Length: 493
Ligand code: AHR
View 1 (tube, helix red, strand yellow):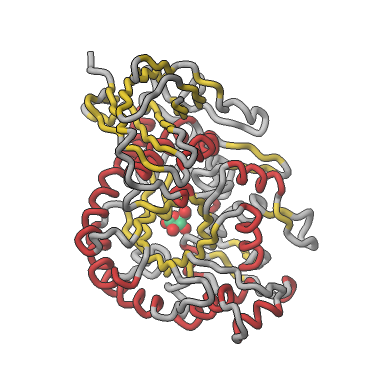
View 2 (cartoon, rainbow, N blue to C red; view 1 turned 60 degrees about the vertical axis):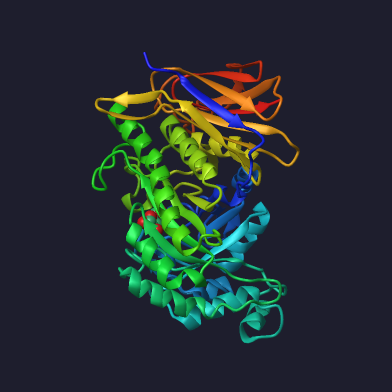
């Protein structure tokens, strides 16, 4: 028998704040995310309307920022196509995602209206791959210039007097791939040109976000930090969790334990990647001024049978929920350097929070994890030390059986999130709380009878949160009985 997982929560050793921006979303012009997912219309003669059901649900997870318009789409996007009277906007071809016609019905103003409706900060990704420095500069001036200028006056003509005050600004997307297939040295030179033409306007200073590495490409981080680190505020790493190969990722819902295990391993690999990218950044930026932003992350499965293969529409099970929880715990624990992240993607694409079908909507298991984790937004990270660890083993491979992170919010309340990565066995965890008195605990749990349980439009509540009674406190020690494939959020009293 293995030693159980024993953790120590050092409640008096908090130092770093968990930025709420770790809980950011990603909304690309891809498949049915923008059109159908967030905006709808009765027929092609009608204007697009924001879906109130989707907006209300997203409000409940307190979306802090939304990355838009891509993704690969961003490096094909020319922002002027998406402003002004809708009937005069040109149609383009979405070459990355299904070759469908994009009529630019949703553009800068509509996206910024969504961000406002959600109380989220906008995060625009400018076109560095096929655009120009002037074009990106003009977009920046269009959304931010407070006085009279050619672009600010154009914005006013289009109905918006006050500047939108957009701070988060990406310069290209995956420039090592769909964004231009560049070497890091070449990208760093380009990045410096683009970053040079984003002046401060009014109250807004740009938070300049460079294209970061794919997964474990440490050389990319090294070169960009070395050559351009002084001109950026964030670097955007991407890491997707696959249960198979890129050619054969496997079904989102019909999977065996081997595929479950590979998903857990993919999620847990984030820890080593973040640690090593951060170590490189520390050499060029020891004061941690530049944020590591995990601008795309999450599970990537085969598209649902019958759906358009270019639309990346996938279901979402308890496996996705546990991947989300373990990944968010990792980001929390690296709060000193990871100060932003964007799950891919918000609605109807990849590891979505919400799926829609006509006028119906369902919340995915991943949505419920994001709702649980709102307790960590802008809270003080409380370090957890591991004194002994139980492993979830498959064959000769293993991952930690339990993931956890903890924080104290502005009202002084401590929360712990925990998940069981093992799909078939319960695990008991002890958590000694040092540096604070704890005499009670309450919590909620997300689990289901099977590891591949999911919500459908017929049964939208098959996987939903429930009160959790498996945690007890005695003498400052918390004992938590975690069922198989489960995520819990605990409030310590
Ligand atoms: O999220 C889907 C795609 O994955 C994005 O467009 C791209 O940046 C990444 O490769």
